[in-house]
Image (cartoon, rainbow, N blue to C red; front, side, top):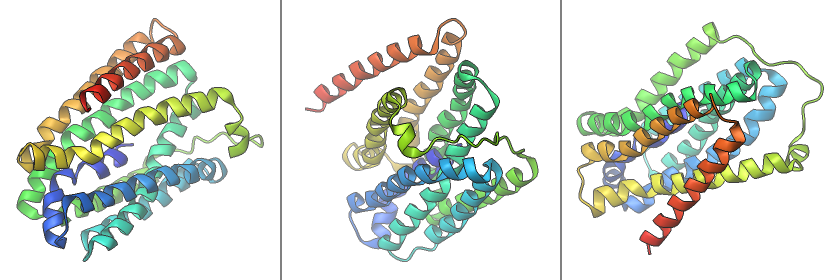
Length: 275
């Protein structure tokens, strides 16, 4: 589940190093992050139906294999253009873990219990953005930015072996798997998907620009960038655990309404502050 944030946050402190290696501006290096986001969006559309048809285990094994190969391609990239393409393919592989992890939870738990389990899994999702920039800054300072993608390749191979040996198949075989267009006609699904998508859009906009702003504009050393970036992830962990506690006493809809209201107010304040 952490492959998404790991792949995004681990190399953020290395943007200036990558820009210097390829003799481009840090803004152009951000295209490698943008291509990853595009792959992340498209890949999730692929793995949902695929895991329903083929099963959870084969799908995540396929994704991890793609991810490992693409990570090595990133490590040996000789041009920024090649890195951008390799990052897109890497994202296609990373999607498998993101999608299948959630599918496995939904296979095994009801709606309310699933929300609590997801809150616990946010510890993993929250720890990755804290640790990844710190590790990335330290490793890139001593071993170079290519070593970061080598680390991701090795990690994916370890996970591939672990999934092959330990993950049981949890898919419930059903002949009534809804199609994409059928799901899009469900107003409840569309409302929740748009709400979550808009929330993630704001977060990804911050992730994309934060490295350049903090390192280049505010002059924070790249190996210290993780400490600043990690404050957001710490808040993410704290909020997820608050959510888990609230769900013991409140319904999911009650929590969602207040969470999105808080998000809208915070986003408005940020928009005003950025003018």
